[in-house]
Every structure is written in C-alpha cells, then in structure tokens.
Image (cartoon, helix red, strand yellow):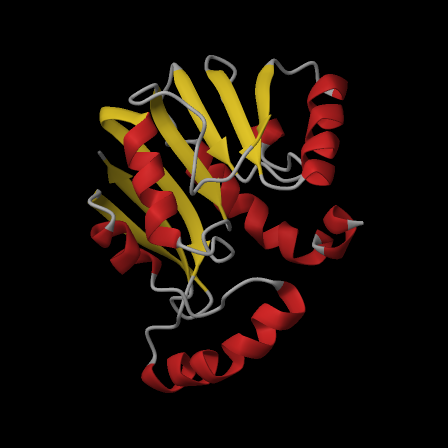
Length: 188
C-alpha cells in the first residue's frame, strides 16, 4: 500500500534517486531507511550493500523485493540514531527522504559519520524547509499538524544539521520544488 500511495510523486522522485545513486562509491555501501526497497533497482551492481530500516513491515517487504530481484543485501532492523554497526566500516552511506522523520537528526547524522570511513561520503536526498521566508514560516506553522498526520517534519534544516553533526559538505544541489528538495553530498 505504501508504494501505491506514493506512485504519483515517485515519477518525479525516481529521477532524483537515479541522480543520487550515480554518485555512490563502494565497495561497502549502507542505505539507511531502505523502506520497501524502492532504491534497490538503482543500486550499483559492484558494491556490497547493507540496508537498515526502523519498521519490521517495511524491512520484510524490502527482503521480498531483494529476493525477487536476486539481490545480495545484508538487511537489518535498526535505528539510524543508534546503529549496531562497527566504526568506519562503509565507504558511502545513503538516505533518501529519511531525515524528515528521525527524532534527533543530528544524532542520526553523527552515527553515519561514525560508521563511514574517514574520507567516505554521505549522500542525502531530502526535502526541507523552504528558503523562501514566507513559505518557510507557513511550513513552520503547518509542521505540527503534518507530523501528527504523516509523521514527517516538513521544516527540517537538513543542511545546517549536517554541519552541526561534524560532516563536511561538498555540494548541495537544488532539485526543485522551490528549493525544498535537495541532493546533499558530504564526507567524513
């Protein structure tokens, strides 16, 4: 049901996801918030994938999708705020539309910094608070209602959170929707 609910928006998001996955370097890659496995068809075939999700139902769907696609992936139930993974064990960590829902995004980003090797990259595709002052204030006012209904924050300041987590931002690409959706490439 989740994938069907997002089918219309996914037509646009799929191009953004392709852009993100074209930047991924291996050999060891971590996807945080794998969900139902929407990104699986885009994973590079020459990398060793580990993927986590907080929700058992989503993870089970991702497991079935991986099996049907004959993908080798190490799937784990887990929380980005407390990763049960060794320090400096991945070359790249990826998240798509995840940090809007993480209760403490800075803690989650610090955990990614911990598990990615020095010099390794963290690539995020995220929606965030509009840079437009009026639209941003409206998003701030609507955020409590949206969180209650959907569970996602619409006013996160993800670029600033990445900096607060001690990561180095290499580039931020504005992908559209008035500066709300961005591709952020950073490194440890």
